[in-house]
Image (tube, rainbow, N blue to C red):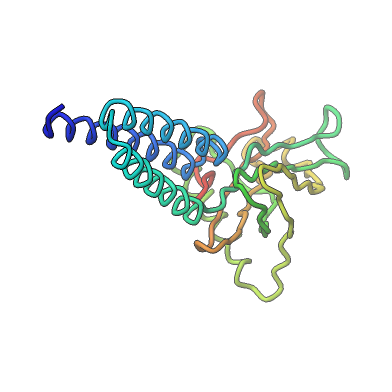
Length: 238
């Protein structure tokens, strides 16, 4: 095998293994796959590339075989360590819901619930700021509804800087799910007035060595055939 062919095969092995490794690590950082799956992909990429180098690129040169495999191992191990250090926490809201008592949603035993999940490889402490209240609703006017939701949410966020703020504090283990439930006395106005709705909105705040992060949620219940709606705004993780 001449040097040009050897170099071509060496470059091909390096590029393929590097592409597979980077793809796996990117998906792990984005939370699409967990780190265990990424580790499995890295090991497979290392095995395939090492075998290719050993058999095809340097078929009879043990010294070069060993050197190329060592270099490949160091590169993939370095990428793996870097990825683990870069991985940040990810807390997502899986759903929000209203648990209403009976067919007439009034009385003291109605609940607003938010269920959230930690998709990280490590546990995280969270602070939940929230608001439950009656306000207007514009089912047929998205522009007005969006403006109202943003106004209400901005007002709710002001509680984060108040000295009397009293958030719900919780710890969510790695790949764990938790929920927060609060009583809501749904007023009779919501039943009789089609222009009103009860809103349940909040922010889940958490931090790690990479900074501070937030996950927002917003929903409301209204006396219609489809009583529970997601807000048009403020349902995102950032």
